[in-house]
Image (tube, rainbow, N blue to C red; front, top):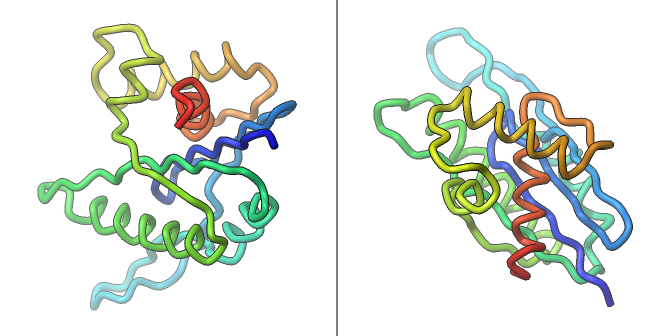
Length: 160
C-alpha cells in the first residue's frame, strides 16, 4: 500500500499539503470568524473543525503520515501565540478522531533542507516558500506560501 504524506502548517493562516502516489494538493486551512470571548468586542478566527475533518476524512483508512508544524510560542506575541495554540488543539482533536498518526516538526528543520542558506525573516521565508513550492509543484494553488505542501514533501523525502 502506498503512503500518503500530509503536511500541516499550523494556524488559522496555515495550509494542508497532501502528497499521494500520483497527485498533490494544497488547501488553505478552513477557518471561521466569530465573536471573541474576551471583554473587548472583537472577532477571532478559529479552525472550522467540521470542514477540516471533511478534508482529512478521505485519508482515514489509508497509509498516512501527518507531519504537523509546531506552533510559534512567544510571550511577546501573546495574541498570535494563543491563536496558534488554539489551532494546534483543534487540529490534534481532528487527527485523533480520525485515528491519523502524526508527528511534529519545527519550521527550521524542513526549511533548512528545502531553502537556500541565509534566508531570514518572515517576508523572505514566505517568498522562498512560494518560489520553492511553485518550482516543485507547478499546478498547486499556492497563495501566501506553500508551507503545508513543502512540509508534506519533506516528510516524503525523509520517509517519516
